[in-house]
Amino acid sequence: MKSKLVVLAGPSGVGKGTVVRELVRQKPQVFLSVSATTRKPRPEEKHDDHYVFLSDKEFKNEATNGNLLEYAEFAGAWYGTPRKPVEDRLNKNQVVILEIDLQGARQVKESMPDAFMIFLKPPSIDELKRRLIERGTEKPEELELRLKVATSEIEAENEFDAVVINEDVQSAVEQLIRLLNLT
Ligand code: 5GP
Image (cartoon, rainbow, N blue to C red):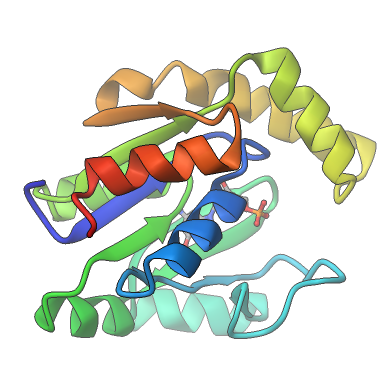
């Protein structure tokens, strides 16, 4: 692996969140970046754990003050990676994972070309649709939008250093552990 900074991207609903959380549970030496977002929290989501939930104004301030490593608008909300926690951990030589969308992944690749880019892919679009519907966190129009974005995101897999198919959480985590040489 070229760098300690790892980007995990892939379409909404593919299970990025579940996979990285399981990875960090098994390998606590990995630091998972907590993103900022203007999206409203889902019932199970906790501030500072799943996301730092901000108002539009707060988010804009963070972005204009240069406090975000990357940021993008996704399905009607803003998402961004707080810069300082990531830089602090990288300075301590820790492996840092960013779980972000394709637009953010492209920005990181541009600004930090050594980042190791991993694309998490669903076994098929039909399976992705099934997972998004099963998750049940979006209204029908939001779900349609996410599926539309997902279809175009899947075409970007060749921009990445590695592709992992998320057939099931355990095997995806095992592949990540191998790719990242985690002991
Ligand atoms: P969700 O609303 O499902 O939590 O996230 C929507 C999308 O935003 C997902 O693809 C997720 O990976 C992405 N995302 C989460 N945090 C960030 C971030 O900090 N930056 C960017 N660019 N995308 C993010």
